Amino acid sequence: MGEYGGMEMAQTRWRYAVAGVLTGFTGLAVGTAVAWLLRTRSTPVVAVAEGVRDLVPGPLATWLVHLVGRFDKPLLIAGVVSFVLLVAMGAGLLARRFPLWSDVILFIVAGIGIVAAARAGGAASAGAVLIGFVAMVITLRWLVASPREVAAGGADSRRTFLKRSVLVAAGGAIALAVGRVAGRSRRIAEESRRLVRLPGGRGSVPQGASLGVEGQPPWRTPNGTFYRIDTALAPPVVAAGDWELRIHGMVDHEVSITFEELLRFEHTGAWVTLACVSNEVGGDLIGNAWWSGVPVRTLLERAGVLDGADAVLQTSVDGWTCLTPLEVLTDDRNAMLAYAMNGEPLEIEHGFPVRTVVPGLYGYVSATKWVVDLEVTRFDRTEGYWTSRGWSARGPVKTQSRIDVPRSGAQVASGVVPVGGVAWAQHTGIERVEYSLDGGDWRGAGLGRVPNTDTWVQWSGTVDVEPGEHELRVRATDRSGYVQVEERSPVDPDGATGWHTITFKVE
Ligand SMILES: Nc1nc2c(c(=O)[nH]1)N[C@H]1C(S)=C(S)[C@@H](COP(=O)(O)O)O[C@H]1N2
Ligand SMILES: [Mo]
Image 1 (cartoon, rainbow, N blue to C red):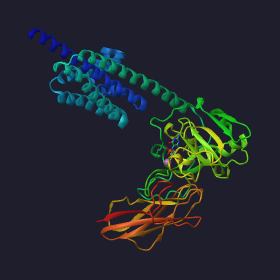
Image 2 (image 1 turned 90 degrees about the vertical axis):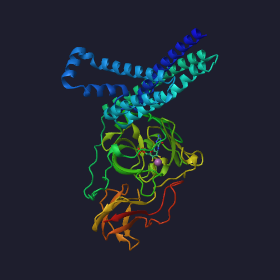
Image 3 (image 1 turned 135 degrees about the horizontal axis):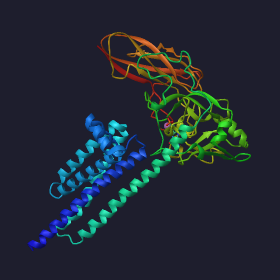
Image 4 (image 1 turned 90 degrees about the horizontal axis):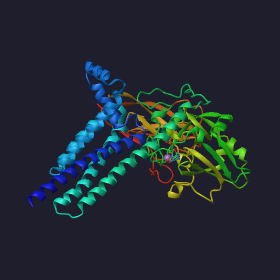
C-alpha cells in the first residue's frame, strides 16, 4: 500500500509540473496573441528581453553581445521563454499544496512583464500581459483540478488531466495562429497606408479661428486625440489596393471604383467638425479636422440616381450600416468620401482607406468608416444599424456649446478669470455664444473666426470673481435663430440638449 501510494504521489507531482509548464505556455501564447491583435509596439516576451538587455550593465552587456554575437536577441528571447516556463512549473508544483502561493508567483512573473511591456509598448502592451496573466490563473486552476481528484480517489483523473492538457496546448497554439494571421493583415494594411500618396494638403488653421485661451483644446483636433467610436472589436483592416466601392440600387447603372480610380477624381478638402450623437452635454465625443477626398455627389452622378430615391444605405466592410438622406449627399455641402484627415491618410481606426464625412449630421447616420458599399434607396424600405436599435432615423447635429476653461471643479485665483470653450451648429452656423456667472445676466462671448458653418467655433470671455464657489453656464444661438434650451434631454434617441454648467472654486 505504502509502495503504491508513493508511486501515485510521484505521478501526481509530475502532473502538477506539466500543468505548470502548460500554464506558462498559455500565458505566453495568449499575451503574445493579444499583443499581435492589438498591434502593440512590442510583444510581452520581446518587451522583457529588451528590458533585460537595457538593465545589464555596460561592460557585461558588451561581453554578452560579443559572446552571442548577432544571436543576442533570439537567445535573450529563448531565455525569457525558458524562465517563464520554469517559474510556471514551480508555480504548478506549489499548486499541489499551496494554490494561493502559485497565484502569487504567477503574479510576480506577470508583474515583471507588465512593467517591461508598459515601458516598451505602453498601456496596450501591458494590457496584453495582464490578459495573459488571467489566462494563466484560469488554466492552472483547471488543470490541477484533475490531479487533485486523484488524491481524493477519483478514478478517471488521469484521462481527464490528459484531455485537459491537450486542450490547453491546442488552445494556446490556436490563439497564437489567430493572433499571427490577424496581426499580419493589419501589418499589410499599415504598410499600404504608409505607401499611399494623396492629393489635398493638410489645411492651414484659418487666422483668428484659435483664440489661444490657455487650457482650451486646439481648434484643429490632432489625429492622435480625435475621439473614436465604432462597433468594431478590432478595427477592420483593408489595404488600399484591395478597396473597392460599389454604388448600386436605384441608379441608372452600377458603378465600382477602386482606390486608384478614386484618387483620379477631382478632389475636395474642407474643415468639418464631426460629432457623436452619444456626446453628453459638456462631453468630448467631438473633433475638428481638415478632411480631403472626393465629393459623394460626383460619384452618385456617375451612377445616375433614379427618381423616387431619398436615401443612401452605406455599408462598411465589417457590415455596419447607416442610412443617410440623399439630399445632404447631393446638395452643395462638402459631403465626401474622405481618404485623408489633417493631410494624413486616414488612420486605420478612423476608417482607412476611405470613410464618409457629411457636415451637419451625427456620425451614426453619415460617417461610415471603411465604407465599401453605397446603395441608393428609400427611407421607407430599409434602416441603418443604430436606427434599428431605437435611435432616430434622421440625425442632424443639435446646436451645442461647451465650457473648457476653467475645467469643472478647478481652483483659480480671485480677480479676473478667463473663460472659454467651443460651440457648434454644423451647417447652420453659430451666431452668438453667451455665458452667465452664478445665474446672473447672460453676457456675449467673443467668437473665433471660422472658414464655414461646418466647424465648431471657439468662444472666450472673462469673469470677475470673489473667493468661494461659483457656477458658470453657457448657451449658443445658431444662425437659424434657435437658442439652446436649458431643459436637459438624454443623448438617446437623437442627441442631448441642455446648457453646459460647471462649478469652480476661487481661493
Ligand atoms: N464602420 C463603422 N463606421 C462608423 C461607426 C461604426 O460603428 N462602424 N460609428 C459611427 C459613429 S457612431 C461615429 S460618431 C463616427 C465616429 O468616427 P471616428 O471614430 O472617426 O471619430 O463614426 C461612424 N462610423
Ligand atoms: Mo456616434
